[in-house]
Image (cartoon, rainbow, N blue to C red; front, side):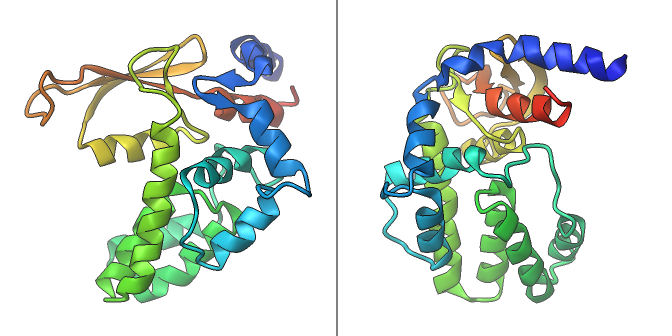
Length: 225
């Protein structure tokens, strides 16, 4: 009965997603471009360039890389790689040389995992491997830009579109904002209420909105929807 209730809940909350146009992201177009073998944006082609440390990615190609990941078999918005706990432990212990191979394993599974990409950037920077650190920085901020371009974050209708809930916190970190509360609205959209004290923004930002349709769609599939 609990499973049935969850299935019905997720079915209701993501029913709108079949339109596949969310904020500025046309997921029908993304799917067509990243799954068509003759396309320049065919996902395996993009991934081959990405893994070869290609630094010539355009803003549009980062968009295809980030949102196109949702159409791969590896997409698991709430999944955690088996090496992640050990990676984070080594990272926080500043055992960066030992952490890097584990980070690479995680990114083989999920090449657009923002939290891991940022921490890999820190690892390489701390080890004075600056050329590689710059590559990870370019990846990280290229993928963040794809999210920023997906909306303006100021309303349900213009919410930033994320493919993992944890990516919301990467945006907050980049903007130097702290969250007070989080509420799930129709859409489905996460509304984050922010601390306004000591912000660098004038007027201060009180709320931000993130569309989480893709993570919820992935969750519904986990429960057999």
